[in-house]
Length: 423
Image: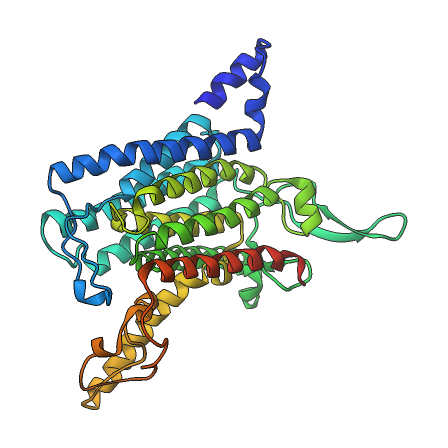
């Protein structure tokens, strides 16, 4: 809103109005506004929740070897994050930008999905929350909507990067002059950094492009569902999901900026995506919201984000990566999320395998994997065999696990950006 207001003032020569056209100015302002709104609104939201005795079902105190009890801690803190994202985005973003519209719609959709889950847990006293099949259905619908929008919208285009030689014989990267609809995406370690989904369906001949778009939509659904669930599982310790997500968003912000900047896209030899630079405004708002939320969510937490926050954060990360055609970098950037999901899947399947043979067996002490690091030997289930009973030795404090996961994510984020130059 303010963006359009000051662009109007610029036409009449109002001093300072021109700076509102700069992405860097609006992005940093969005970060600051989101941080302040998150910290300010968070205080009143927590007091309101406590005053009305609205808190999550008591967490199992036996999980923590240090005996930390978390009683009467409000949940649904994701509302703080969502409000803090939407306010600066609506104020500073170009609301006619197709990517901005997608991000705002995705925020509202995932927020409602997570809210429904938290509502059932808190008000219906059902710790299982929204049935899993409805969660998956909601994520699939979101992925389908995003994929089809990017396929059908005339504004969702890209300019492919190609390598050529200039008059002096020097190799340079240029971008095709005409923006086009494309099923290409960025892939690391490959010269040119491009991979076309239509190549996978090339055996269909003249229908390969249509099939390529179908494959793209299916990949979009999978990515958004996987990242959303991964972030949801990562939300098990104070500050864990918020900190990891903020780091991931910073990396995605860098990737969105260079993808929407013709010179930087040429330097990194990646496709140029007109309009994607506007995502930086949204991403900076999200980073500010998450950092502001950490003011209250850092150990010991005064509020939990709940599924309202974790499902939304994961879903938005997936949508952002899809928009800037960097979804194939997510296994590295969001490795922590994927390991959390994988640990649960492996643990469940291994336990079922042992049950068929009449014995109790587990791979890890506990899952998701972050819980594996805070278990003492005496907390292990009697009569159950563990594949890694002594890893790690002893139990780590929750705050140490959280910070070490943050450090790991920082390394993964740096490695993700570096891959653009390693090929």
